[in-house]
Amino acid sequence: MKSYLPLLLVLGISKFSKAQPKPVTASETRTRMNFFVISKPHKLDPASYYSIARAKLKCVFKGKKFKAIVASSPEKMERQIKKALKKRNAMIGSLWFDGHGSFKKGYSFFTVGHAEFSFKNINDADATSALHSIAAYCDSNSKVGIGSCYGGATYNRPESSKLPLTRMNGDSLMIGMGEIFKGSTVYGCESWVMTKPGLFREKFAMAGAPPRKKFKDAMFKPVWERLGEWNSYNSNIQSIRQVNCVMLDKNGNIGTRFNQYQSKPRVKRQIARKLDKLEPGLLKI
Image (cartoon, rainbow, N blue to C red; front, side, top):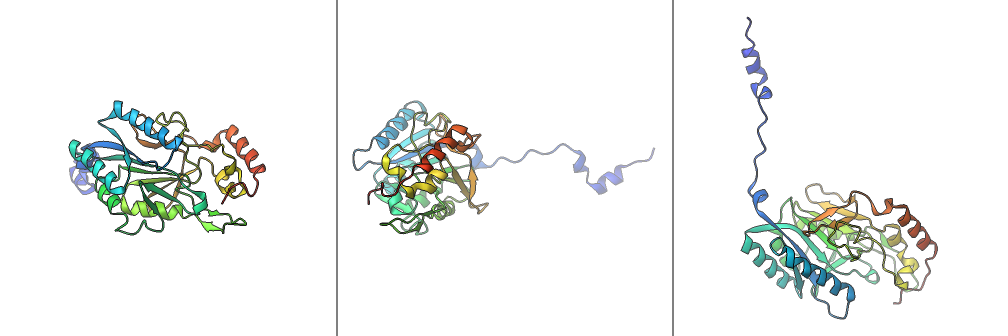
């Protein structure tokens, strides 16, 4: 019988052998912790206190994998995160910056205590030293959430009789964050980020719109049009991508819904009604 062994050697016998498993890296085997960072309220703010209460309650049951930090400064946040990570020899799984945005300011930002991070200073190494420090505990398996309203806004804020047209620059903020947290995926919202019941239940708890009259100002048209829309950025891909509505699970892991918020007919009808009733001059300057 004719032997085919020489032919197999030429073609590469490895093709016919069992595939070797992919080697597991050290970072993949490390323990992961999730962090929910909230700026310490400077005034009575029911939304902030609700987020703090929900996150603190979560710590009671998920303390080894989840930690809520009420930060008065980036440096305090840095110390608490590093202390928790070193105690468990862990890396960051998900890092959520909970906070508020301001449409009046005309640009995207998030805060950690008294410090504000936006396109204006996100590339300043001195201003972001605390972020760079904790980024050392992140890798391609880590996720970072900008949890402020308009944090990933890519549009222009319309002009009014009192405010000029400005570019929100949420994409610039996300790219800057992506360059700090190299390889990690950064998420930012085009619209409002809500803190409704079900915050840690993989629901649309972060989608929707606030009820106050001022948010029905005509200036908010691009915000209403993008209700529940989120973007992501990763320095390995170097492009802003639209993703489904972001959510948090019971362990504080950042993820995305299986469907878009605006895929719901009820939501589309709500947006259409709101757009039809927008009025100028409701946002007090």
